[in-house]
Image (tube, rainbow, N blue to C red; front, side):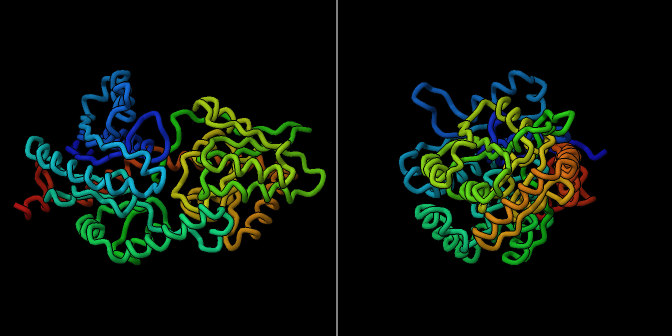
Length: 436
């Protein structure tokens, strides 16, 4: 078995109690620490008025509950100033303040490296390609990923996102295309990480190869929850087809595609939709449901405690994902872990995870085509219970392919490839020797 390495990890977003970026950060740190000793430079905002931190307090509480983790996980925190009012006006503004955080993290990284002598540095979160941090300048082998953010939102779908969503994603598409071409720091980081680049999706892999000329290994950025259902979802005779959807109520999640799809159901289809989450689009989406005359079959559940949200997924017969701009939503593996088949767009990371054995992927051409194909897929599952059950049972099998243990195995292989066979002493590697 390879020796335990001393790994420096950059994980600004990291929390054992959250999903999205913070959940990604914690999942990867925890998985890597099973085989190696990790020093993590994590982030957070400056404290709330009551003196509490968001990520830091959650991490420390978890380490207190599992003190054995402290033997292999060493956290250092750097806090970022709060500029919440500006971020509400223009959310990408967080990058301006995050870059200042990255510079502080690099200064701390140099100090820690002098004290510890790391074998390797790994930048984990944020996963966006445009913010690679500065660990690649430490003079030791560098691994970067999972990486996302290179794909644009399909232009044809922008009008369906509302005028605010259309404006936001149009500007983002233009900016993203320019940044892939002109940003200097990602180019330098990709070159330094050669042989140690991790793409979150196959689509991201192809973009990195196209724009930066580097091959990468595809590893889904998310992992399943710690508990998995023992049996798949069951639909009893006479029971309505229970659909579930979950996510931030933001334009890119595109719930209206599903609302319009269910409004196209043929007469006689009995169904009910549980909508989890909330956000700036909630009121507009509720008005749309009323206009489409489907509001009576929709339950707007809001944000539920995690256990209750998972139970809602398990009680569903089909889980639906409509995101037009995403990597791979955490809720996808949560639903599959409950033995629920998935209907999603053949797009983003969902394309890599969902197979014909565990769900149905809808082609992405135009909004109206997606609405019709979503309706057809859901009606098919509603009328063919043996098919739905087969997909549900296979979802439980498929989700095991994305376990954190399997990710750790592949990351170990990447580390060994990055270090090379000549590496035998802690803190020393062929690359670090060349830098001396």
